[in-house]
Amino acid sequence: MSRRSFDQELEEIKQDVIKMGKLAKEAVYTSVRSLAEQDLQLVDKVFAVEDETDVLNLSIEDRCLRLTALQQPVARDLRFIAAMMRISYNFERMADHAAKIAEITKKTASKPLLKPLIDIPRMAGIISEMVDINLQAIAARDVKPTEELSKKDDLVDALYEQVYKELLTFMIKDPKTIDDATHLLIVALYLERIGDIACTTGSRIVYMIEGRRVWIK
Image (spheres, rainbow, N blue to C red):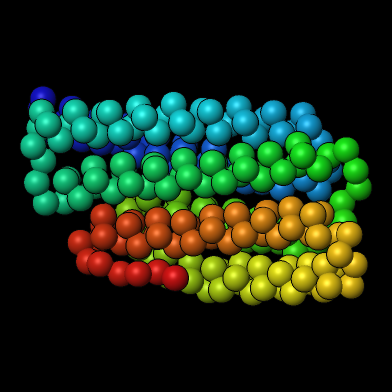
């Protein structure tokens, strides 16, 4: 394979990883919307997107492994290929968590929500911004955008704590709300984990571009 062909293959992998990120973002947004609107059609959409990320992640992994085996890349190219595999997997995990949120919608759609959703959609909105930061950094091969991830993750964590305290109050006041409150608490926990994954992805991007280890949290 010529250097030009090799670079083209790397670019195609990068574009597919960016596509993975966009799919993950769509899955998260749609899963929370499905819960807020108790819409089972949106649940099906989340499952379809999650299936698409599974297939695309395996394709990216196969191509990265093939390039590693056949071209024996070194230094920056090797870091790039390894990072693309890991980041693709991270985006696939985000979509998995979104599918779990959609499963909760499926379980609870037959009755009204315990409370209107306010902080949970806010968490999803901030996570969308974090994924956009990941995608911007990957596309431009620039670590600068990742500097915003930690602050946004702090916002996600603060909202999770707020949701936790509010739902705990519901459960203490009326034990009959425990099941419904637990479902919403699990949704918030999945979103908090997705925020953590976005930070981990940012750390991997920094290593890919600059070869230094950082821990964004």
